[in-house]
Length: 55
Image 1 (cartoon, rainbow, N blue to C red):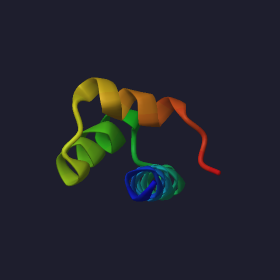
Image 2 (tube, helix red, strand yellow):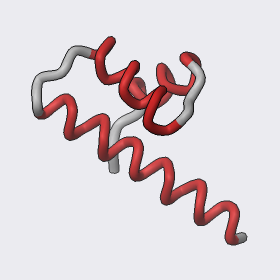
Image 3 (spheres, rainbow, N blue to C red):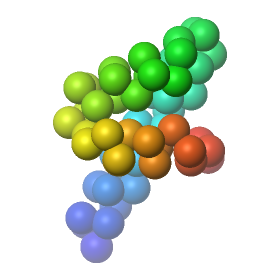
């Protein structure tokens, strides 16, 4: 259960970062590159976060 909670918290953090970068008018490409580096994501994982809506 702790792993699930941690994963949910990490997802919320990444989605919050995506939303903030969008608010600051970063391009989708730049957002993808930044979250890939900061959160050690693959390109596919980063693309999935760009498609999700933050809660």
